[in-house]
Length: 124
Image 1 (cartoon, one colour):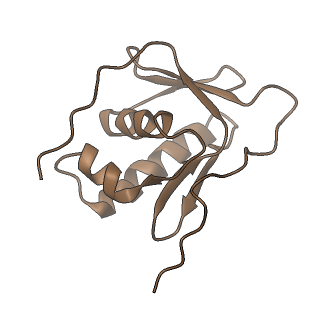
Image 2 (cartoon, rainbow, N blue to C red):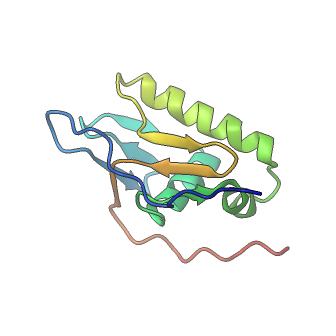
Image 3 (tube, one colour):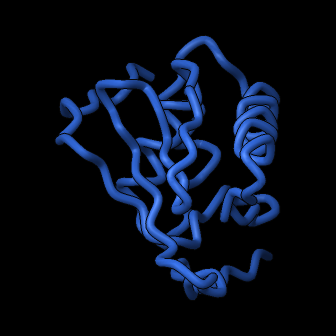
């Protein structure tokens, strides 16, 4: 039997400035609230796009695996770890909560500078 919690989470504790992160889709970068630029790999960019589509809601690991053909569930851990490390190098902490056994939730505001192309579901 599995107990499932609410799929919505409160925002992370606000800092002095606005907690708004920006995915610059065409430039392949994530901009932190302080204005630091984090260059993204293709897999990191796809993960951030998925999080953008699920504001403050859980993005399941299954959905991430489906959106990253050729990568298994274990590789998702590596992608998330690298993304956290890159953001950490800017002196900030990525407001990404791991929901054990389920997926991830981005706890701060996240926007995109452009509308990304429509994602097509991976063939199963």
